[in-house]
Image (cartoon, rainbow, N blue to C red; front, top):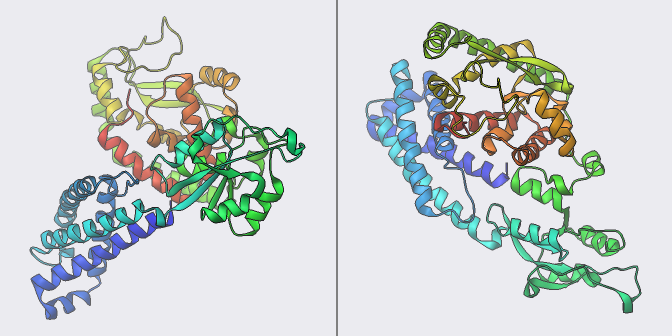
Length: 464
């Protein structure tokens, strides 16, 4: 997560405390409020208020920013977040009335917070749209890869602005015979060549130089790039900036050496132990909470269509070890009798009437808590695929088998960033996200995926 987004959320938490304090001051007065602040339960009140405010803002996408975001969108997201906060806090106060600061405090505090949050987010939006607060990028190259990087940087999804393109000549060839690479970028965006890269970068006040050369052998101006590096200009290659902006890997441009020497793809023993401990705790809690509903779900499935209650299927897990995955059955019993193994399609006719509800609500996934408890799966990780698909995709897609170096998950980075996949093209796109997750795996990323999953489930995204 970019530091400026961390700052955005942190200031929101501070504003929540400010809003709660002044609303309590208005309703209770200084003397009564001083007494309340001395009570231990007030700490729980403040923590619950902050957490629910931030969660509601996340749920209503108040933190989804780009340079193209409009103030009207910001206002709408904040209003929806405020209403969501009111509902959730009302439930919390109903369950535990002791943590209420006073009558009317909730409504006033949310009103004050909404005003403060909108003012802060609007200010953030203005700063985010100003080029002076963005990193200026100079692209080294004028070919197809440079075009892709230019489109990525100007898409408005990042904190980068395009300063221009620099043509790259072959420094090893005689000056009279040097040939430039094919020029595919707009000619008026070319601001110089690599003969004096440092001077060009300084003239354009470039913070970052992106090396976007489709062919580097005999073309890479090593000395000029090194001088820029030593003069405090950040040097990045195309796959790295693509990863930073898109949150996925650029499969067509990465090499085995890039995978080996790039940062990431590391998991400490402490992280693995903590992840497994959390998986066990969450799966046990989840099963205890949902087991009372199993008989009703089972009866509904039986009444809706013939066949078993549970659906079992072989899937490929960690290190390509196969395991049996469990789900509530959502398709006809003979769904693949004539077709064999096929991907689910949109409005799939094999899905039963009840099965569509089970899929939309993700209730059919609940038995996979058993897989998590057994250690076949984790809560967060790449979704496990069927052996038939894995063997096919390994032959077609480079690096596909690398997604099996960690345990598969109930949810994953690809599931919250990309809709349901039902083709080889979808599998390629989801692999970009899966490898990004494996490369950047961390407790923070797992938490972010968990929060994003809540949005996916509540709003029914990516279901087939």
